[in-house]
Amino acid sequence: MKESIVILRTLHENRESTQRDIALQLGVSLGKTNKLITETVSEGLLVKLENAEGRGRNVSYEMTEKGRRLLERYRVDRALILASGFGSRFVPLTYETPKGLLEVFGERMIERQIRQLHEVGIKDIAIMVGYLKEKFDYLIDKYDVKLIYNPEFAEKNTLATMHHAKDFLKGRNCYILSSDNWMRDNIYHTYEADSWYAATFMEGETREWAMETGKNGAIRSVSVGGCDKWCMYGPVYFTKQFSEAFLPLIEAYYRMPGTEQFYWEDVLIRNLRRLPEMYMNKRPEGEVYEFENLEELRLFDEKYVNDSGSKAMQLVSEVFGMPESEIVNIKCLKAGMTNKSWYFSVSDAEEAPEQYRGRAYICRIPGPGTEKLINRKQEGAVYKAVTELGITEELVYFNPENGYKISRYYTGARNADYGKKEELAACMTLLKKLHNSGIKLDHEFDFRRELTGYEKDIKDVNAQIPFEDYPAVRMHAMELMDWLDSLERPRTIAHIDSVKDNFIFTDEGLRMIDWEYAGMADPLVDLAMAAIYSYMNYDEVKELIEVYAGAPDGSWDDGGIALKGLSPEDAFAIVTAYMGMGGLLWSLWGVYKMALGESFGDYTLKMYRYFKDSYKILQKLEKI
Image (cartoon, rainbow, N blue to C red; front, top):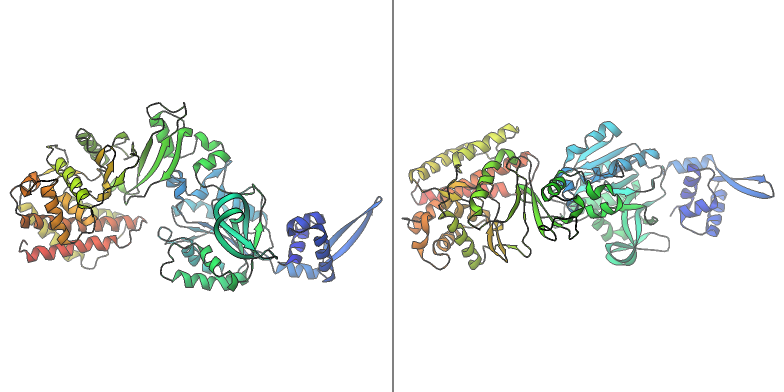
C-alpha cells in the first residue's frame, strides 16, 4: 500500500489533520504513523511546520510542490455505477422501480451516491443500465451522467456487465459502485492510492464472500462463507494499471463457454496472484448497507413499513383490508413468459384479518404489452365459468380491467411432469373433464384472428417479422386453416395454454391454472398446445393422444367429444395441424415481446419450426 499517498491525501482534504486522523486513514498505530510521516518528509513530499502555543508545541505539515505533483497522478478519473439488474429479492417494488431508484430516508440510493461522488470532484459518471432502463434517463439531465446499455442483463451475470463497460474503464482510475448500496458516510476521495474492495466485518456465520489478506493488507484469497470474517461489501476501486491487467481477463472469461452466470468477482478470485495487488478497504460497522429485501429496508427506514410506494403492495393491502406491514415473507416466483408473479403471506398478527392470517398467496402482475394480447374481461368470464367445476385455483381477487390477480398459494404444490405417464394421464383426464363439461363462453379462440392480430401488433411497435420465408409460410398457414375449417370440428371450452406448468398437484387434488387464452375452440387444440409447449416430437404426440383417449383407464371410445368419430390417424393429423398453427402464433408472439425488450432465447425458432415440420407431415399424409 502506498502510505505516502494516503498521508498526502489526508492533508489535502484537511490541512488541520492530526497524526491520529492520518493513523485512522492508514489503519495503523500512532507510532507507525509517525514513522511513515517522517519518511514522507524525508522524500521531500511534506515539510514540517512547528508552531508554539502556550506551553505545548503542535506540529503541522504542508505539502510540497513535489508532493502535489505526485498526488495528482492518483486522481480518480471517473465512476461506473452498476444498475442493470432486476433485483428479484426486492419484488414487488422492483416490478415498478429499479432497486437503485428506491428511496432511503427520502433520497434515492443512486442519487445519494452520485451526490457523494460530486462532493469529491468526480463528475465523469456512467450508469450501466438494462432492466427498466428508461427510468434512469432523468439522471442525464439532473447530474450530467452517461448511460451505458447492457443488452445481456436478463441472461447473464455481472461478468457480462463488465464486458460491456470495458471501454469506459480502460485507461482510467475508476470507482465501481452498485446502485443499490447506501453509504452513511462519504467514503469516496478525490485521490486513491491503490485498488481496493470495500469490506465489512460479518460477525458469526455468513454466506458473503470472505477475504483473507497478507500482512500488507492485500487480498490473497476469497471464499464463500465463514465465521467472523471481513467480507466483500460495497464499492470497488480500480487503478488504470489494475484495469490494464484485469480487463483482458474479463474478455477471455466472457468468451469462455459456461461463464454466463459468473460474477466479475469470479474472475478476480481466480486470478488474484496474476494481478496487481488489490487491498481490503475495511469499513466501520453501519457505514455500508446493501438491503437484501423489503423486510430489511422496513427495519432501516420505517416509511416502508406501511407505505412502500408499490402499487402491487397497495393493492394487496386494500384487497385484504390490512396495513402493508402485515404482508410478509415476500419473494419472486419464477417469472412467466407473459406475467410477473410474487409470493407473500399474511402475518399472524391481530392486525391481519382472521380469514387470511398465516396463509400464503400469489399476486400476478400482467407483463408489458399483455393488454394488447389478452382480453382480461374474457379471462374473468372464464374463471367465473370454470370455478364451479372445482378444477382451478382459489381466487381472492381478479381485476378484469388490468388483469391483476391474487390467488391462494397451495403449500407443497408442484407442477405436473408430463414425462411421468401417470401424471400426464391425470392432466389429460382434467382436460377431458373441461372439454366435456358443456360450459359455453361468449368468445372463441380463433387462429385467423390471432394471426392477423399479432402481425398488427408487431407492425404497431415498428418491428418486422424476421423470418425470410414468412410470406410463403403465411400462405401455407391459410391453406392449413382452410383444411381445418372444412372438417367442421366441434367447439368446446379449451384452455389453450395447457403447458405442464399450468397443472399443479396439491394436497387437495390436481388444479389447472392461468386461463388467459381460454376460449371456445376445437378441444384438440389443447393437446397440440400441450405438445409444443413441452417440445414433444411427433411420436410422443401420438402417445399423448392415446393417453388422452384412454385416461385414466379407459379406451379410445372414452375420448369424449374431442375424439368422437375420429380414427387415431385422423386425430394425429388434426393435432399436428394445430401444433403448426400454434407454433406460428407463438413465434409471432415472441417477436412482438422481443420488440418490447424481452428476450426468449431460441423460443421463436423452435415454435416457427413446429409450423414447417407440421406442414410437411400433413403433406405426406395427403391432408393438404
